[in-house]
Image 1: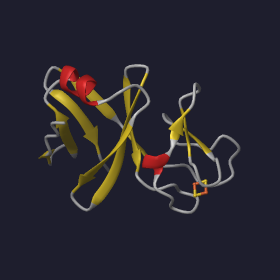
Image 2: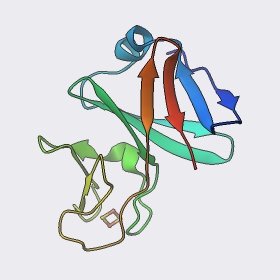
Image 3: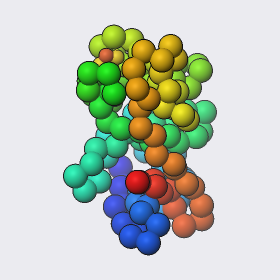
Length: 117
Ligand code: FES
């Protein structure tokens, strides 16, 4: 797996892959990988050929979300208490805890980027 970590400090984005083909090759459908970006750990997941980035730890009791599954509604299901977090908004399906942090993923001819804040 090729992961490029190039910080673009003007817009706070990190280049992960050179292009979408590299990203597609590295990820199976509904797979989740943890990336270390500086002192931050971020999960990157692929669902229906879309990429989503979110915090590596569950906002409920900080269980690693790398061990999660992803359902048909584009929700990450934490294995510890089965809370379900929307991949786009981060909201828990029943508002049982605060939302999971999500990060925009941008794919262009220049590569796949995660925007951090
Ligand atoms: S730690 Fe994730 S749902 Fe409780």
